[in-house]
Length: 248
Image (cartoon, rainbow, N blue to C red):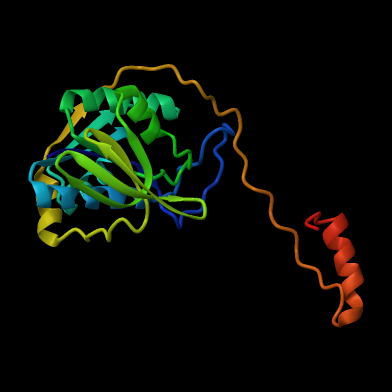
């Protein structure tokens, strides 16, 4: 099976994010970066599919040279091949999806795996757009998947429960936590990944359809207030919740 896994190079979940001087991006000074947590589930699922059905797993990432670090981790986990779609420019979800779909056409995969979302922008749009551009079915937030005889059965999360969807290959799937337990790169895998080449391609330029006009950190939460210590405080508490907090 020919498998493509799309991964992203994102700020560490413990990083303290500051807005850059332009007011439209983050200040990258002192920020550590990592393979997207949801992308790890996609990589693991690709490796399991290869182990079950044979074939090759190719990891793709769009960005600058820094993304090679994340591609190396995917290689260390066991991915066969890595491709960097080298582009330092800021792309919106459509432009990112266009570059990935363009690369995928040349690779002729049977399945393209994503994490359900990237933890930097949380748009959750790229997998669906890639499916639309390729004319393939796409299934999101998948927690269980079975492939047999060209049929794909996915269990996905929906609000308040799960639903089961059946479709056919080729397909785009985005992985949710619970689909699997990602493996740790072995020492042998880490050493081998250092020697593996990373292919570089320059994706076609595509005009953005969405522009970031401003970025602000959330306002700090106001300090807590104690309105009383016994039952006599209930009327005042109810008034504050109604008039100030506006939650009742």
